[in-house]
Length: 150
Image 1 (cartoon, one colour):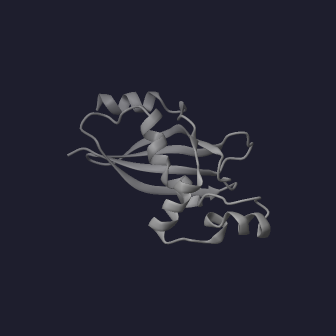
Image 2: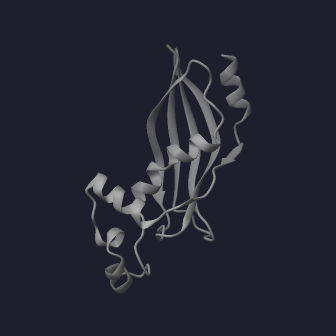
């Protein structure tokens, strides 16, 4: 498939999204959606008093869930006819908290594309969510996407 050859030629190439501010309203909405109302995410005053973070922090899973949005902003389109399916993550680590009010972005590096069986290709991408002004990313992971060709 010629389109897959184009992906293979891009192995090692890095793509970076725009910055996004993580505000308290977004964190509160995520807490309501996931039913995770841990005070470190939703109680600003208590988080200032009782945590080393100086205020509320975003859920790690919020940062993770934004990978799709960040990828949509900066990754090249999938090959024509491909149906991309999230296959999973390898080596997912939440490396640093995301303080509410900070800005984050996605950074992706194509790592590999391999045929699994006829009409199925597994794409591996090194993904990170970077925090503006921080040396440590919020998370690092190897993101696996299965490309299905009917």
